[in-house]
Length: 191
Image (tube, rainbow, N blue to C red; front, side, top):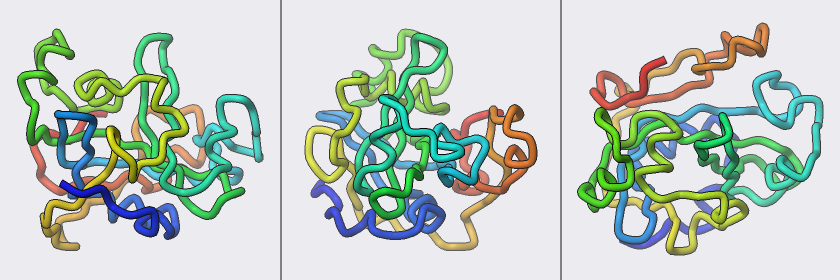
């Protein structure tokens, strides 16, 4: 599977979020289809790490070129993978929330060491794919971690949209319908 080119990522955050659905996230010899994402729209979005233009060592990557991996630690033990979006200098990103495992399933299962879905939820999917903090700032068109198109066609009518998960602290932004997923997919993460 060939990586998507850098030009794929040159679009608005919400368009990129929808376009990521159905693509394949590959890390070495494992991979899965993206089935759920969330958009974070920078300085005006209270749920974004870059809300208010916050520029820290952690968020600096969000100000970089689109298609860059923003990987960070949550709860002191899980990583989350985001795709930097919008133009350079505009700190926006798309969180990859869930995948449908396609290949390397046994390896994913051995990494997870837990029962339940392998890659439903941002922490589970990074654990299953072996995505660590070392991938922060990685360009997502360059192996070993990259996004690819395997020819899967997702009809627009199958794209669902609603509020993001786990951002109740973000006041009015908690209700923004900036989560996108493949409708009725059994592996979409639970809120």
